Image: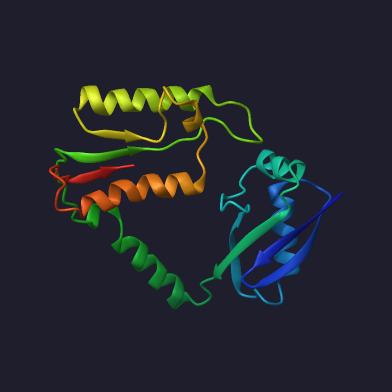
Length: 191
């Protein structure tokens, strides 16, 4: 049996993970927080990286890796008939058929590709490498767009990507957008 923590808002609760299923995890979270979350519905449970825990396999991998801090989010349940009707009206008014969408054709978008192929705790991801190469080729050769990629086939160190590297990469091109010396006038962004 593994022990874990779940954070709900600013409070942390201890969990005992006897049964490593998402259903069991959610039931335990609801039970632990029922006094504070009365009238609220559990909408999602995430891992430390903010990814939704939706499969038992994901949960088991987190436990195996020792990543035992989870985050739970609740939202109020509609309780009155009026609340249910208001929610229904809001949902209906946002239906795709009632939205007036306008579209603009992009003729010169800025294309930024980012991906990590090598991780400290994961296998080498050859498919990501192939995807980055294919996407760069597609946007550059098929569409004629200017493409910037965090991965460079000639530089093996670009197979890893830290958050700091990603921030620098994005800032480099965002700052150039505001630079008056920039001859390119982008009309969209593909990231």
